[in-house]
Image (cartoon, rainbow, N blue to C red; front, side, top):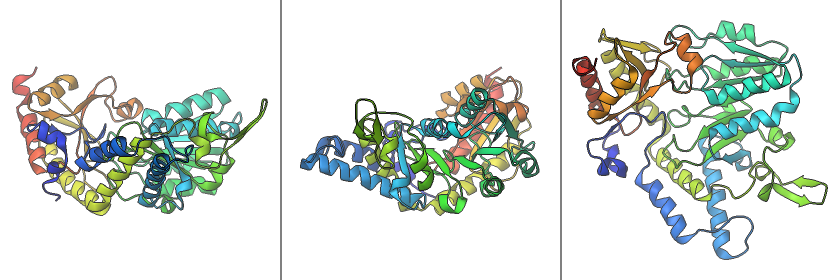
Length: 403
């Protein structure tokens, strides 16, 4: 298990009693990321691509170097396949808008019941606008994908299949490669929400076989304000841009314009330059640990926490009861108590969790939590067994003080 990781994160120095279990929403930032952003603003700040003076050239180099690191991190073929957005939600919407012209009335769009709203609502709205048929692949009682149902839902009329790699509610690692293989057999385009996978497990987009993969920087130790959309080069070249103006332009006439090469075609206006530098430092930090070690660390935490949670009769756990093929996300309720009250009690103990529907209302209804909020504790590299013990001890005592 990773040790002494908190020493790399200033937030824990400034909040020495903090037990942070909300990394599923956003991760904390290591000192190297914070320093990289500060260093950029103090020494290299200039707009990119447009200036020939040395400061602008250095800024451009740092921005492009960041894309190279991200491309290597997810095993992309080229940095030209990396589009920076302000977050993963914008990346998923970019794909939806740019693919909209391929959808006709009666076509099928297939997603899963476990999607985050960011990978559900865009396809829902596209289906409504185009009078397409929206289908949902079901999950079992623990939130694991029903592959038999997937084979039935994906047909010769399916044009797009969108799926999350890891559920932000159950922590389940979905068999995306199998689903993508089904989609490829019928010629469907595949879109993967990898927000909860890229920070926690090794991801190889070429091995995965998807056409598009979106994830966010702030969940993988990077700053807010930057997301990543990876797309196959052939698709990015064919697609129309989502936003217009700035660096995405090649030439502009009074009544016609032409677009820049990829990926700049999709990056209208000044991009998140300092954020890209911070994301670059975050990739360096994760590479320094090794993503196999990150996953192994979480696997050990998962085994430990699951065993404790399942031993408590007053805890209702939503998601797998076994540690296989999942990350360290635990969504639960305390019988007889509202999730917000439980989360507030945990906060009194210095434990930061999230309560609510976690932007996955259809999944929570499917798992039997309809009409209720739930508590989510999500662990990461800076958490250890002591943090897990603090959560478990607090949950043992919560009914004495709340209700």
